[in-house]
Image 1 (tube, rainbow, N blue to C red):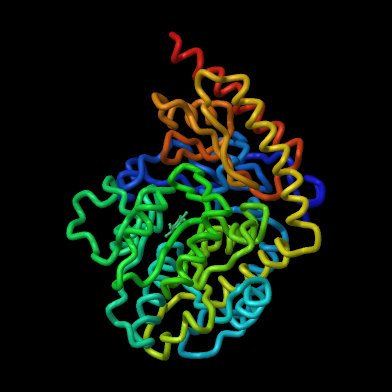
Image 2 (cartoon, protein in one colour; image 1 turned 90 degrees about the horizontal axis):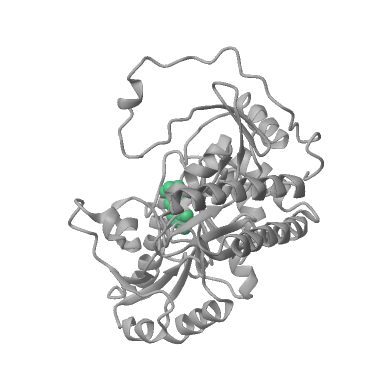
Length: 421
Ligand SMILES: *Cc1c(COP(=O)(O)O)cnc(C)c1O
């Protein structure tokens, strides 16, 4: 599946003839919650996106770590088309064959014994929180309601997941913040120990903070968290919404540490661009989730399941992830070379697999570099902690990776000149 660019249909594209131009001023009708870049894409193939005016961009943002298999991957397109002609939606009032197929596959590939399908990362995180509270409720500890989270975390934009993430910028104006979260500084073991009380239900963490700036939690710390949870009867929740489905070079990032959580939230890469999320849990952790305790109208509908199943076909094909790890070395080497070449701007290169980033010097914001990269027709994504995320589709070839690094070098050169001027 990872074959040659030609096999994936990566050919130069002409501008599509039939693009409908929206009415002038229509972009203001779309609620202004994003400071959007003034660029409109009409189509995508592999790692390339083409604008409505026919300009091609190398996509090293993957729609924020979503398009793990690039754009219009033929196997995903075939799965979606096939399902579109068969059945779209029936509701969770009935058994859904696709859910059973995908659930069985995910269970065979992970620690999970019970899986709930939803539509987004926030919904998966929110459900993970509900499962943890409910577990203690049915286990005779209804007082165990609080979840420990970490500074710099991101778990989504619902009121509860915002409170879990604890980012004051995102919470401003949305008071009262949902109760039930105790946040500790990233990497502060003493604060973590002190935060555990008889009211603690779970610890929730991203194995690699994505939005927070590609900050990796060392394997030793993940192992320590597992031990701490076991010692105190807490559930361990991993938010693998961004790190999951091959992004780290393993199917799930926690595999690098050799331990498993009790509950895991998954979304972004799972549908390769089709909205789908999942909550994975052990049977024990999910023991409170009886009929009527949770639901989602669209969650796990046949369209989403057909695509998720096709994504798993590709990502779990023999050799695929080994090949990702191999090409990820090139990416890492490329980023390290940029750190060496631009020491005035780049403080560090971070991450693992295809979840990488450049941490910039303390006085540098990500936006100028993101904009300079876009001028080089390269898409990358800003993040917290002065970091620019470099998250190409997992199918990017070595030459596409080299191309992206060259464009980043030109962008860094541009930023260097303009910060000197
Ligand atoms: C993106 C993200 C979310 C939220 O996902 P949405 O689909 O935007 O709701 C939650 N957790 C992590 C780690 C994420 O990266």
